[in-house]
Length: 224
Image (tube, rainbow, N blue to C red; front, side, top):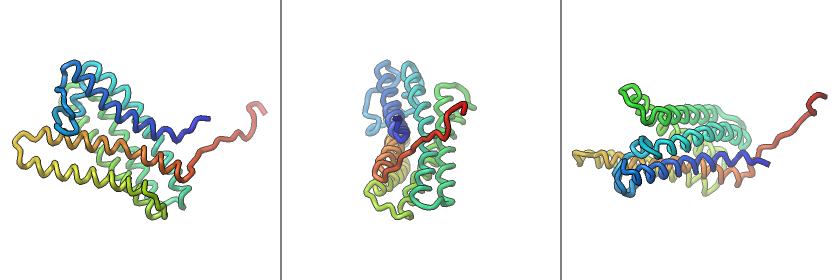
C-alpha cells in the first residue's frame, strides 16, 4: 500500500538533489565555476539552473518537489488536528506553507527567462518562498511544543530555524565589509536552501514517531 507520508521524503530529496545536480551539470558544461558553493559562494542557485542540462534538471526536480510540498502541507494540517484539537494557528501554518510553495513554482517556472518583468517575478518568488516557508515551519514547531510533543526532533526543527536565522544575519552583517558581496549572498542562499529543504525530512520522522497514518475505506462497491 502506498505510504502517502513519503511525499515529505520526496520533497526533501528532489529539492536537495535538484539544486546540487543542476550545479554539477552547469559546472561541467562551463556555465558556472567549480567550487563548493556552500563554502565559497562562487555562483548562485539560480545561475546553476539557468543554462544547459542544469536548466532542465532543475525544473524537472524542483517543480515535482513543489507538488509534493503542496501535499505535505495538507498532511501537516491533518496531523496537527489529530495531535490536538484544531487551532487557528493550523490555518496560518497551512496557508503560509501553501503560499510559499506557490511562489517557489513561480520562481522555478520563470528561471531562465529574460526581461525585467521575469526578473521581478523570480525575485518575489525567492523572497516569499523563503520567508513564508520559514515562518510556516517555525510556527509548526511552536504548535508541536504547545501541544505537548516532547521530542528531540522538534528541537531539530528549531535548530534548523535558528541556523537559517543566524546564517542570514551573519552574512548580511558581513556584506557591509565587502564591496563585492555577491559571494556572501550566494553562501547564505545555498546554506539556507539546504536547511529549508530538510524540514520535511524532520517532519517525516515525527510522523513515524507519532504513528501518523492515513487509511482508505470503500463504503460500497461501484454500481451497488
